[in-house]
Image (tube, rainbow, N blue to C red; front, side):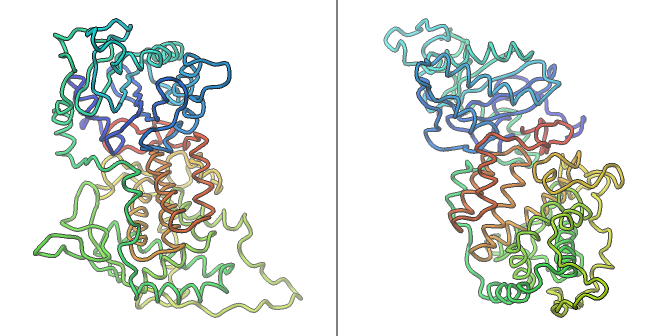
Length: 517
């Protein structure tokens, strides 16, 4: 969001109304912490609330698992022998604050407790406002944790400026004990849902979706397209002897490059035809990424992949070095993908003088009509070698351009996959890749679908949206048990590892305003 697009906050309803848009869903049983930079909102962090008695830190409804810091925060919220709730909450607070410190410009903080309780009848100091319900209010339940968070935030130079408790039907300031101010039960949650800022966010195109676990419970594939499945099997057979072939690797990157360019500009004559929604129902056409008119803000344009091309792309995801190269290319450019593949030694060694010739398979035909094998690399040279310049309108608001050519050294695979390099990834290209992966996952099942879900999970983790990442990893493992990359990335999230880009404001993904970290 540019400076001219800043949203104006006029009250707590606006702040609380912004949180679901920042996260992408309405949190449940969650602590949401937001940093402040003067009067401006900074980073947003969501973690599972620990057990109010300090006995465990599991999330009752399982929602939001996998957020940055959630795994570690839950771990420290488990009571150790000889420790009490205060020690447990103090450890939890320290870990929450350690992640907020990634926002180096922060000089204040806000807290929101999203609970499943609505009886708010006791002050934060434990004094009952209703003697008949003394000890039952969630403000008393969370008073100990709130106090430890206050102390930890103050020590970190981010003093707490305000805090709220939001139930399923009512919300109230965590420090207000005056029933004449907030009412005996608090204020209706509808005030948050109907806030001015929430309305403006919806007007700008932001939608609050289902919680990550709810999305993960939905079936991955809408149907197995027989034509796509046949093409996929055919390409897997052709790819099998060519997994270490340099020219085949180059062609795979060429084809993906063409497809990603088509997402940006669907008028390109590459065999991808725009699809319109059915006129009677306006529903999504089979195999399309979305339906409706093109959106100038997001570049969201419906299109359909021909079966041969879809099968090619799905089959290429089953070759781990090619899959990893695709992720690296999207984030850091093609030179990084090629250099990393070379460093890992995935290509067959060239024959030296006097060495026996290595039997190599013949050229692979192209899945795009009219394109012969071996002719794409020269025409595509440099197309995605470096990220584009200023973000186009089709890239969407807040999508940052990648590094400029020659601005920094070519990063390695590990640096890219952990978000340590480049300094700023190509968010616009990663969004286009995400759309294609979502489409491919809906066209079949098995390993290609697991690879697509895992890659999308990595993109979500790069954004700092650990809940969505974790849900996608679990989705991949449910459809293809033992999928190694999903297991490794899920473990990274459980350890509370934060993507390097999400930890830095200048590099973090932004959809509308403050970074989701």
